[in-house]
Length: 178
Image (cartoon, rainbow, N blue to C red; front, side, top):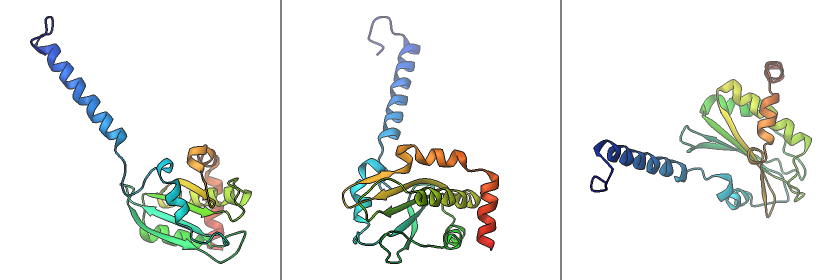
């Protein structure tokens, strides 16, 4: 750069620094997390977690700060239209494993990706449980045999998080204790 007319040592140094900075930013933003792929490149991975679409099943992934899976818990009670689980089981698992992040994934046997009222209520309750434990709920994904829907990508998770307040958290805790 010093051989170019009009570029002095100071300008050449700044250009090199800017180039290195841009290179680092590019590497950080394009680096793929191997342990937990983004929603867009793992739709098939989510679908493949479910081997039997006759019954609904819920999987809760618990992740560390680097999005590496710590553990997962599965709820499968062989019902066609719902998964029944105790929120206290989830609260215990969160307390024991102390994940930084959590992702809920469940299938719809109806082949509809439209979240039900029960799906939204579960997501709100799970978000509150996560908040109490210091865990961030990063997504709730609904899958069918051929497709997937992300609460995070659709903006639905942000809306649910915005409506979470202290009264709801206290009610969830009260429900757990009763």
